[in-house]
Length: 140
Image (cartoon, rainbow, N blue to C red; front, side, top):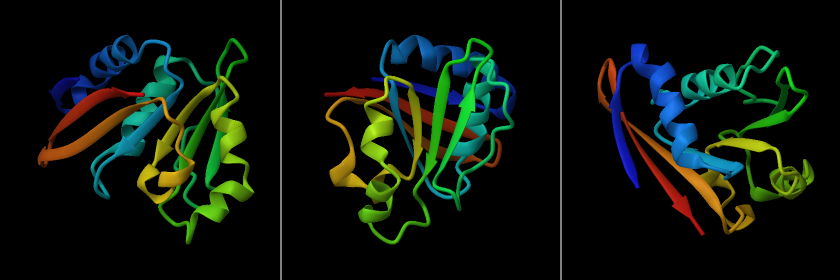
């Protein structure tokens, strides 16, 4: 487990530390209250791997697909608005998770029985208006 305190200006360096800590894990689950900075952190993660697409929250589509300059796909999920886990099953979330591509999942607590055994979690908490604390942990 690793704990990092940061401000918005630290995000490029924090993102590198996250990648270093995550290793080869492809399923990243983001936990945190509304407004904690999950989507902002995901935008920096996508910048770090040189995605060529505009990164935005997939609140209504449930999943956005991005591609980096090497042609590798990244899937960004936001399950905040789903009514039940069946909606996630309907979009084939398990196929995305098994794709071998990086999967960035906001609000994973909405799909507990669909989560894989192995994943990387990023818990974001608000320390002050401009400071966040993230806790990184491998599971499985």
